[in-house]
Amino acid sequence: MSLLAQAKQFFTALNAHELDEVVAAIAPSANIHTPIGSFTGGEAYREWMLMHFRAIPDFTHEIRGMAVESDRTLAFELHATGTMTGPLAMPSGDLPPTGRSIDISASDFWRFEDGLIVEYHLYFDRFDFFGQLGLTPPAED
Image 1 (cartoon, rainbow, N blue to C red):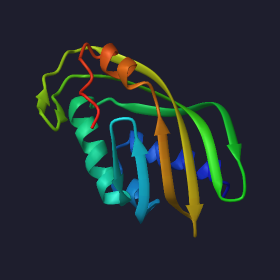
Image 2: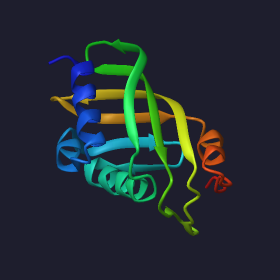
Image 3: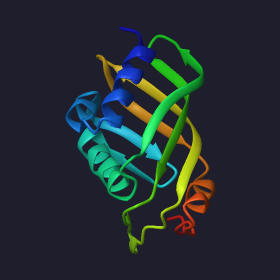
Image 4: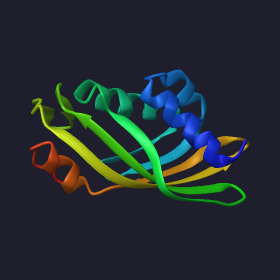
């Protein structure tokens, strides 16, 4: 299966909230970096996504635009949408639901070893993300 096909399968499972399947695609030692946090492994990714699904239950992701695949790396454009109907957990405490929707573009860069994601770099405009939700972005660490 191509790396792009694996990514599409990953997001199909994520959109269906089938997090066991998502976690199975990520190495336990994978380095995951996002604009609002970095962590290690599939279980930490599960917790991160559960936090998002609590706040945005209809959070969906779709690969759109360019995708570039090489031997063990994949880069692609991602599009995410959803409506904030629940609280969003932040280190300083929960941010209350705003009822506002997001429509965000992102870029993902993944590296694979033995069929698993070992590097996962997600880039999006966090100010746009929080702004669309009607929230002030938390201070960077």
